[in-house]
Length: 166
Image (cartoon, rainbow, N blue to C red):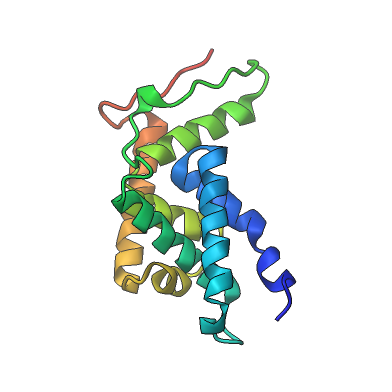
């Protein structure tokens, strides 16, 4: 197998890692740890299976291990999130910042599923395999996560006010 089989997935791994941990440097560390483990365990990958799902599964396991060792703080308070300065004409950027903040308020289990299904476009079955959870759990977490996002984006979630920019 050539290096390109793994390398082509790095942008998606970086995007997912950034959404999981919140900052570019920690995300890059998570991607590096994931790639290192994938390279060392490449003999365990089954040719013909989905390399992308396999890499996301490895990243999930690395992330969980790091959270358990308290390397990353998963619980994020909205007031701790950095405020992004943008011009009033950049409505799309403001909306993306609001979505990012709302995503960070989700429990890690829901955030992972929402990101893998919505952003990475994995099927429920692929997410189930990557996170090693039943498909019903994937669907339940996705449903609860989407509902919490709707509430957060509409400002209905108590205790999590989103910044209103005029």
